[in-house]
Length: 250
Length: 117
Image (cartoon, rainbow over all chains, first blue to last red; front, side, top):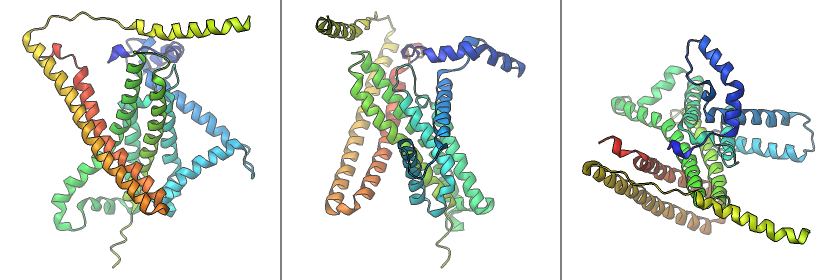
């Protein structure tokens, strides 16, 4: 697979600028770096670019809020309202407090997916490292929120199932289904974005510049849908974790 | 001057685009022992079959989901946003399984089996 990749200009620039200082810092911590010119991999540079772009664009966005919204403010209000509407629909009224984490993960994945379509950049989500990071974030977050909402012992008792007698059967099943969630989240996102990018590369090797265009249009569509489904599944997992037992009040 | 420039520019763009196919290279086949050669053949067939079967099954199941959604919307147009949401969600979950098998197929087809047997 490595012969399909070439090093990107921005990644080389970053490595030339920050490779030696980072290698020196790592040497202080006792890690020997073999090759400071290729220290930082391409997906980390792309993640940093997405981070900086999102922080600058959205951080500057909350300045100068007016009652009659400008065009930029309308777009951003639409984004926030979409995620808030999703949270309220799935989790309920107190879903709004999860907006920062879920909104950040959703916007990060959306921008990462769309970044790969710009020439000279690559999608960080086309590597399993990045998607596994996003999936593990959601995994840790929904367990933590569940334990915070219900208490640690009561949350762990949910793994035993409704009837205590069935616990030896239910606990392995529940554990497997809970551990399959980050696996499926990460592999779904990774598979979609990586396969789309591989398809574009192969098509571009047949007739570059014109033939990949319809495939890139499809890639915009599937990238947005995959980000939406990631956020949707995260909301469903959170709602399953913090759901209070309504049926015990008989 | 401007009128004469346009056909030249168009010709140059076409030349530039078509020259992309000149980059395709030919590789020489190597010599492999019969055991490794048969493993390569089996790996190619299996890799192609895995994704073909998964695409067939995935497409059939997604077709059932879409037809049920269309029928539901036609019976009750007021519920269209809910049905559309459920449709997209269901399609993504079915497609996840197809993607799993696509990844396995990519792994099978990209491994250099010659260095392993």
